[in-house]
Image (tube, rainbow, N blue to C red):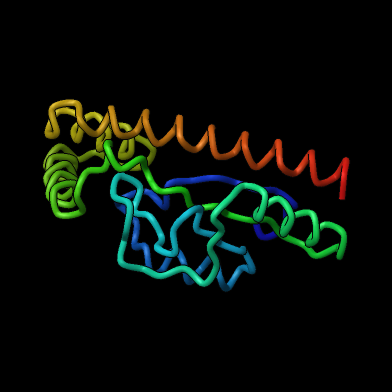
Length: 162
């Protein structure tokens, strides 16, 4: 992201990561993190991690205009657009945190390591949350695609008619 001229849409970082350190790293690397219709960094399954973003945009058009301006200036790097999970699919931070902790314990007890950790945690969380985490994951993926498509459409429009 720091070296590519790209707009990437996410629902925040993986719930198992240290979010303050993740944001600090992105800032240090020169990645512009923009909240989409929020000023709070989302926490993947939860809409608000408690971390405030420096930049936010209420529409895809605003992000597109900023991206096109950055391109015209020849500035390096891309944008990370943080789009919160739709409210109806949100899992409160305390609930998802407890599920993650439990899944991590299961992984540790079973000696799960390396590339097997993430799939194991996702499967365990699906079991622990009775499928709610899977439903949330699908909803945020669909939302990310919708937001990304809207931004792409706005970038095309901004390039054609500056």
